[in-house]
Image 1 (tube, rainbow over the protein chains, first blue to last red):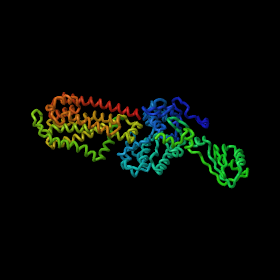
Image 2: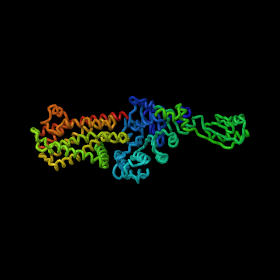
Image 3: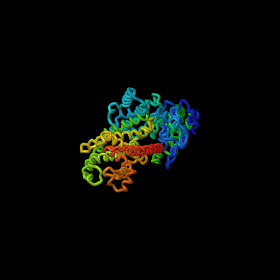
Image 4: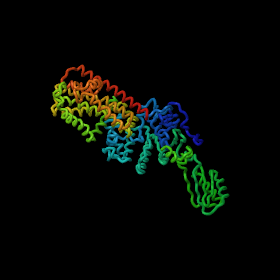
Length: 340
Length: 257
């Protein structure tokens, strides 16, 4: 679908089982329709490499949560297949369950139990016991800065603390793949930033993370690769940078010391071959280039050669907002409102 | 193996909840005590009616209140699972390797423990109020068995309904609409000998009646074990039906996710 992806290890061509070794998650052509509901997934395919953070980005109702439910064995697709940690979610659900940790939108923390009790129950269900369980609980409490409140009932926790406990519960059995469904929804900016740091650290430790979000900023900041989904279909996939560079490119704004002729600007842009678009607006030159940073020196040199002097330069990367707009024909905000 | 240990873990969690809510414990224990005291006084003299067939109303009433309390406790079983559904606790269990049966079984085990504690307190209070049971300690154990066996199917039905409708109001409505009439269409308060014949006919199909009459017969030192055994077997069969329905309802919930 995207010309720019031809040189990539094409992840969503139909793969027949078993899945490739380096993929922690392989999703093939998932379709799911809820009774009396719209089609939640309409042929979704993507794959996630081991040890990376993969973001599923889309507005509410795009099918992100449905995809997560299928991958975590909670729900079954009408058709299609999926593999997690090498196991078929439909045929080997118990193996999948042992390999994954899951933090869903609807928390899952037992509010009437303490932090420690929540972790202990979760650990026991995965077969942990005795001192191995106790030390794992202490380790996670420490890691998420919950030690001081560990013996308080979770109902008394702040939203950020509950969410951290949630993530800790998902990690108790050292899963290979972690699912985070809208992990920072409803958190204040401070708690969100803290959780982002923690998620980044987990990925550094080799965990594969599938993250869904409807925050463009979050996807941009955390995910190494992204799949944009809209109405149950994948509309674009790639690294955030790649997706953004597939747009018309970065925008370059140059403020000039003195007025210059349109002609000299056009000539300079022609000489700096990477420039795709140029326009003079008073004392400002607006240009576009696929890779702004590499095109800029050539453009400045060419302007210099034409006798045009630059006072200041501004380079801006396109945002995921632009990416979303291009692939779905509506802005992210519109899509969010439409689904609400 | 996993099923049993996981059921234990689930039950532990629920008992912990209960212990942390002294008000709730107070209410569940207090209300039956009130019934025992209140009805015990109110209907004290009905034993004087010819054909009632008992000398002491408190002796007659105690097993009735034990079974009635077990019935109502079982009715409320579904309430807790609705909250677990809303907070995502159930889904969290479902993505883990937790035994599916344990999610339902833990609640029923918790119900059984609650009823055993409740019955012990009620029997003790009944004894203090003058109830005497010629059947002895063994018959008190039969009473507890009857109470637990009555609670299991109704607890399962409550869970089945909760999983299907997922609204607390509906469970509250059903408990009041169904359980109260079932109580009055049974010999909890009144001797079968004095009940209208149509109520006796309905009662013969009523599990509350099976439970109360088996327990009462055992407590009175009645040695008709065949009758007692048949009633207990009927309760167990109804329990299997309830468990089947709850399992189906749980599967339907899983399909709806």
